[in-house]
Length: 460
Image (cartoon, rainbow, N blue to C red):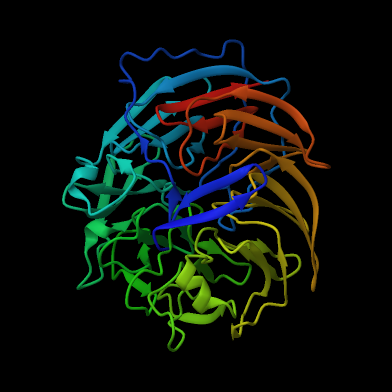
């Protein structure tokens, strides 16, 4: 992830930052005490649990029931700062975290605040070596653990400290916290936790990359901590001299086999031996020992030209026992669950400069193609990849609910609804100014969209 990537798209040239969009986005917003909430009246909602990025530990981005159409704005809640991660739904509470290091429990039907917790003063961008979020607080999507009833959140505070917090989902009560700056001889102010938190098998996994601009002394790594907060925090770091960030917004992904998969960005090696960067690593639990690894045969050129895989998290297809990954080069790779090193993809297909999170429906992966300014449907077989439909002039991380696809479009600030069958447009409705890699949550007949000022909720 080095500096800026220039990608040619059909309508012109789109500049994409190494680990974010090219244009810095201010996360300042309206004070929640003065922003009016518009409650949905007469709405009887039946919520499930949306406890992690794209709903499942495998980041499938799929739920059974669509929201009704046409959608109307149910309520809008200003939270004082940007909400970069997906909100969570636990019972009838919507849990949202901001760059101001505030975590809110909202009534999911009305937007009314049930509880609020502060996790320290966020880090101002003026004190960082580079970056594009100001201030820098909670960026990654939190995760809920039903067994302990805890929500796990990573906050960055002044001084560049990264802390894992366990909060009671019902009240926001602080249960425990642990520092995650576990790498010696690295600049913690150059590390950023943009990726979603993952909870699996009694462990909390958190991955780290660099700031926009890829400055200073950092390296990509992922940690594993018990959901009880006790015992040792294990970690795996990319064995490169510098960079190799694990920054994709979906974060670590749980595989069908119980292993964790992480994608890393380009590393420092340009001419010598492979440094395990620009790769997909399969890691075991709880210690995160590497079990296998894939990297494209073009890894040296990827490192040189900032065309790495780390801009997207792996898409899991458990029914096929396959994985799809794509990145800044614009090439999608089909992988075995257990890879065999450099050049070990089953097949490959050009056509998607992928950033952030995909959604998986059976043998189809819906890809967020920032370079093409499209959402594209990729049909996956045991040994083949094939593009089916594309939705043009649209970028965001898709979510599938029933027969509909929902995309928070960064270009316009609209929530876009598509037909799953062919990608044709059902509806557009404005949500507000969106973050670099926007996503959404569909639950209980509502669609919740995080924005640069809070949450906008829609209902059919």
